[in-house]
Amino acid sequence: MSLHEIVLPETKPETEWVRGRALQKVSPTYDHARLQSLLVIALTAWADAGDRGRVGTEWRFRVAPPGEVIRPLVPDVGYLSYDDLAADAPHDAVQVPLAPPTVAVEVLSPDDRRPDVEDKIATYLAAGTRAVIVVDPSQQSIIVRDGATAVLREGDTLRHPSLPGFTLDVGALFARARR
Image (cartoon, rainbow, N blue to C red; front, top):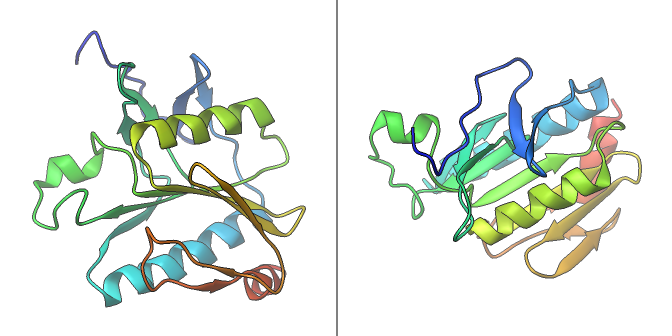
């Protein structure tokens, strides 16, 4: 442990460091869990098929924007490319990476506070995450933040350079989630 790192105990659900305080993640509803599951299935199939990297749910990352303290953040779905952490990296380095996810996915819950979500997005991007994908079940939209902001809805396809070759039909995602 370092004086430059915030270390929080493992909790269920996980606790992360947001806006200068420990914040326990909200236990998701079925809509949240279903969207999270569909996204992790799609991203894992894509990542495995191309030997591109690791995908996990509720995976704790030790994130450090330049000049700031290291803090834990736990995206709903995290993708970490083999370019960012090699396929043959030591097991301990993979468990709780001292690196931001290549792409972080956050599925909004009714209890999420906008300032907390914005802080997480800003922290991920400042630390080097290439894109933060925010899935809003109530608006049936996907917001992609990567320095710019793109809002995707039914009829749009999610694509991003940090996920080369990955595509996801936004309308089909939300239709499947309603089942």
